[in-house]
Amino acid sequence: MSAALQPQTAEMQEMRKKLRIEHMLDDLPSLIAGTLEGAQRTADIVNDLKRFSAMDPEVRLPVNLNDVVERAIHWISKGTTLRFEAHWQPGPPRIVTGSAAQLQQVLMNLLQNALDAVSGAGTMTPIVWISVEVVKDCVCLCLRDNGPGIAPEHLSRIFDPFFTTKPVGKGTGLGLSISYGIVEQHGGNLSVHNHANGGAEFVLELPLTMSATRGLSEPHSSA
Image (cartoon, rainbow, N blue to C red; front, side, top):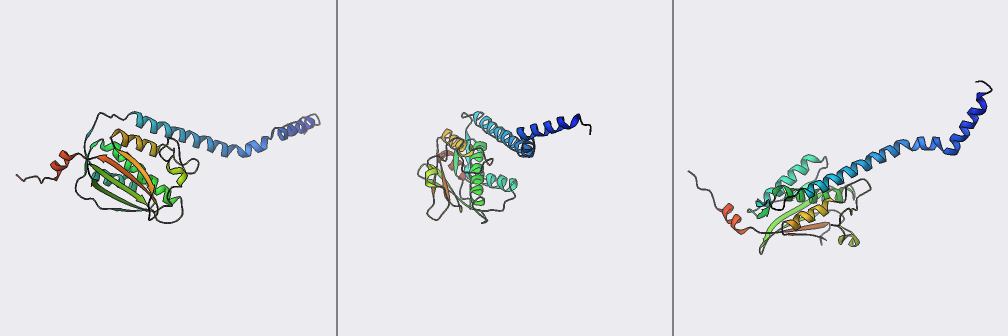
C-alpha cells in the first residue's frame, strides 16, 4: 500500500469507528428480519380488517351450529402440526340464522386462541371441551381449554381491537375482536370467564331459529 493511501485508510477506519459502521452491519440481519416481520404483521391486520369490512349483514340463512363446530375442528386440525384433543359430541340440530362462513371463522378463532393459550403455557397437550345446548330461546356454545386461564386484569379487555397477550409478532390482536363483532351482528353475545376447573371458557350465545329446528328434526320420507 502506498504511503499516500495509508493516512486516508486510517482516517476511514476512524470514521467507520465513529459511525459504528461495523455495529450497524452486525445488526443488519436482525433489522431486516424485524422489518419483514412487521410488514407481515401489517399485512395480517389489513387482511383481517378487509374480511371484517366485507361482511354482509343482510345475507342470513339457517345454519346448524353443530356443522360449524365440526368444520372448524376439521380445518384447525388440518392447519396445525400441534397435536390436541377436542372433546365434542354433537347432539340434535341446533339451528341459528346467519352466515355459516362467518360463524365458522368465529369458532376457528376461538379454537386457535385456545390452542395458543395452552401451548404457550408449557408442554401439556392442549385439550378443548365444546358443548352446544339450547337455553330458553338461545343456542349456547361453550368452549373451554386446559390452559392457565386469563389474568383478571385482562378479562375486560380481551375483545378490544389490537389487544393481545401473545408474544410480539404472534397474532394481530384482532381475532377475538372480529369474532365479537361477528357474533354481535348475528344478534348474539360472546363472553369469557375463567372456569372453576381451570382454563378459560368462551360462551357464544345466538338466537335459536325454532322453525328451522323443527324442519330439520323431522325425518325425510322415502320415495
